[in-house]
Amino acid sequence: MSALWAGWAPAVPTQRGRLRPVAAPTQRLARFPFLLVLIGIFGLGMAGLLMLNTTLQNQAFQARSLNRQATELAYVQADLENRLDSYAAPAELARLASKAGMRPNPHPVFLVLPEGKIVGKPTPVSGQEVPSLVVKTPEQLAAEREKKVAKANAAAAAKKAADEAKRAAAERAAAEQQANAAAEKKNKKKKPANAADRGDG
Image 1 (spheres, rainbow, N blue to C red):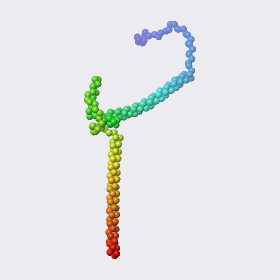
Image 2: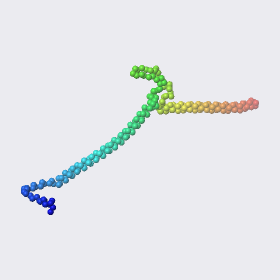
Image 3: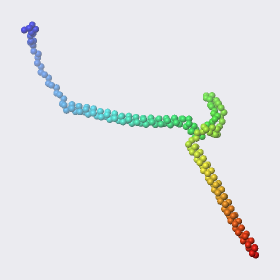
């Protein structure tokens, strides 16, 4: 044997410990209530997920609807801004001023603020001073066209009436000439007959 094995010897217990009775094992919980608790927790989790999913879908629908409404309102806003810009254009302002009866004044007068000093001599206008600056509304243009058409129709009717009167006068004169010529022919025929009667008598 080797020197390593020579010094080895198994330990021998010198004294034995006291034996004690083992405690009774604790009773385990029944499986059925545990399963009921697990099923309840699982059911609550599923209901919570379903409610969360439904809420998220409703919010997504609302977000889509609000986005669509925001887009429509953006288009409406752009349209209103375009209309406002068109109403603020100088030509449109001139047309609206002309429609309201305002006329351009070739002699402007200025009010200097805050002194309240008037620069220039205020003179009223009749509206015919600068006719090229008067912007007429479509209604005014239509009224002027109607007046021109009515004037042209009246002139044409007057000319037609004058032509008809001339033609009627010419027809009367021709009828009178024919009547005079016929009367002269009759008188000429009567004269020789009268002369023949005198010669026989």
